[in-house]
Amino acid sequence: MEQQELMYRLAMSQINGIGPVRYKKMIEFAGSAKSIMTADGKFLRKTMGLNPKMAEMIRSFSDYALIESEIAFTEKNNIQILCFDEHTYPQKLKLCADSPSVLFYKGTPMVQNKRVLSVIGTRSYTEYGKRICEELVQQLLPYDVCIVSGLAYGIDILTHKACIKNEVTTIGVLAHSLDSIYPYAHTGTAADMQLNGGLLSEYFSNTKPEKQNFPSRNRIVAGMSDATVVIETDIKGGSMITADIAYSYNRDVYCYPGKVTDLKSAGCNFLIKSLKAQLVTCGEDIATHLGWNTIVKKKTQQRQLFLDLSPIEEKIVHVLQEKTAVHIDELYILTDLNSSQIATSILNLEMQNIIKVMPGKMISMLF
Image (tube, rainbow, N blue to C red; front, side, top):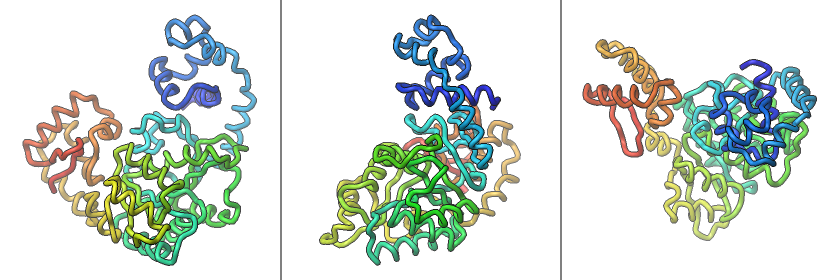
């Protein structure tokens, strides 16, 4: 992306009243942030349909020194700016309407289309929760998964540390900017994570971990993952918020059950009881339900069998060979094909018994 367009996009993100949903719709309509930020009042009101107050806020924005300072900060600290319509942006998060318009990421490059699982839970865990957390990460080793959490006290930091120990890719989503680490005690772990994973935030530098930032952070944790796993939580708290968000995104939620008398498991038991989550007892349960296949090489050998595929069909098959199952909306993003091309190709591939269409518009290989 051109530096000038990036500057205008960052500027738009700082205008009160332009939330992520409106931000994306405006850029999609106008074609670029520059077209919006340099437009006259008439265009903003008549063509863009903005009210006079919003139009004036856009026209009067002048703090480009802040934007230039932020860009300089990211360049100095090797922070990557991820815009919502770029290929570097977390692909699964793109499917969420309220996903951040801009993200800041520091660490090893994110591998798109990778299996992603968020693991969350209480800050005051028990020995049971600690054991479950460490065993889960070990059990997920064969599945080449990236594990996401929030770098908070409790299950979050246990998860990140277990990933580091087992060399599993892990990403911490922060409720503040990347110029600091909260809690400060997790600074060392955060540094280690950047060697095989990284840190992700939607906030400009100098943003403190304010209370209202945490629920907003939780939507990123839920949205960028294939599914969310809850290990010990009370009936209220951040983990329950994240689980509810994941459920609203139509993502799978899994919970480890606990004793009915144990308050630390009350939230997990409630989610299972209310049918918002499925009961699991090990990593294999999760992998089986998500249709993950540990034998990666087997898929790469299928291509030679499909000699009569069109270029478009080959493109779809290639995506499906890299993933166990893909939602049709995600297939549009990953292949950059239009709905007509996708529909025709899916029908042809299904008739050749190469793919299968499952409930919920999920598509997978038959092999």
